[in-house]
Image (cartoon, rainbow, N blue to C red; front, side, top):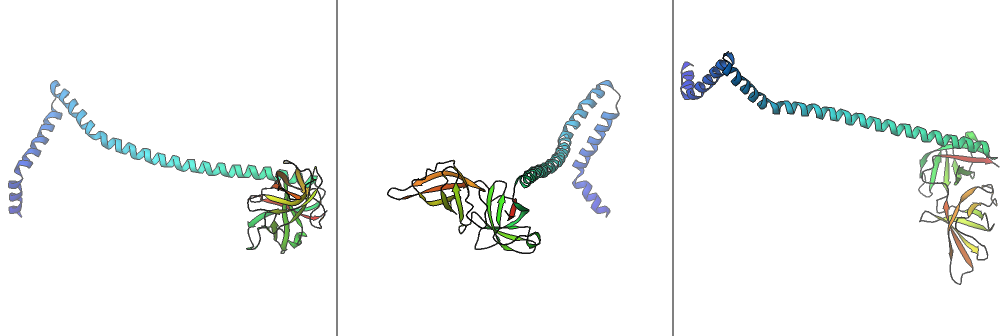
Length: 262
């Protein structure tokens, strides 16, 4: 054991002597009361402070990173709260419109919420949260505050499936408000509806309002369908067509009404 210590001291005596001298030098430096040494002590202290600056900077950086993460989390929480507030505001606005519509209509209607979309593989449809218990039956008109949505096709005790106006198999008898001409409307793949085989003598113009004709056991007359955006005429053809944009947004509607009677 002692032999190893002696060998270690012999091998590293230069380094050990240097360390001892450095410790002795600093002891003399900081314990000496001579004014000149005081000045030197200040410079050495500044040097040590400079050496410690990176460590202090790293500690500050770590604190800033933690604070930044906390601020990021608070910002996300505020964004989520703002989204919830806006959703509540919009829902309140929609409900006010629904209540106003219910007070103004002469139909017997049942309000409903859309709880699912595309429930059938063969029809473009929505699922409503009302059913037989509230008087809902197949082949009843479904509308929104903006106009036609579709009709009920399958009804359970508490839910009803509605075939939407945008389904390719949907057909609707309409009339053009100004010209009073009738037409049969169907949906197109481009997101518009079209009424074909309208006599050329009928004066139809873009912007004209399109309403339900009333010649149906399902839809009462004068429910808004949409407006004409284009009139198509083909040379040597005895008929014209009218492209119609639906007033109701069939992809985003959330609240609707089922017409029980009129």
